[in-house]
Length: 151
Image (cartoon, one colour):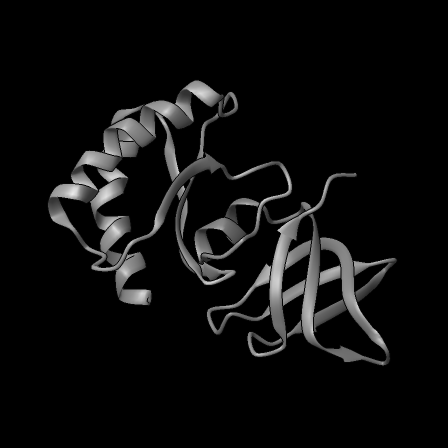
């Protein structure tokens, strides 16, 4: 799956940028027995439905031509969203100092979700937040998901 994501990222990035957007992320996932290829985009002044449509119309024929995925799938383009997931080192660097929610695979002292200000992201994938004056650090293996949190 990672190879598919890498190939689609390589194909889609210049096309998305030509549409005046930033490629935020690509995911290829199975949900309910059906495969979905999702491209998430961002734009400084916000992503509109028209932006998603334009990117979809520009990327779709290139994906058909290059055919990086042999089986059938549903193709979707959407905004990264205000409470977007942070998945790449650049995402974490961009949002240092912002409020995030960290979900863990396994609870620590009965708690699986921590919210606070993103203080650091390590080269090893570790995440550090400050929560109510306390600094909390999590290893990459502990973290299931990190997303921006409004308010």
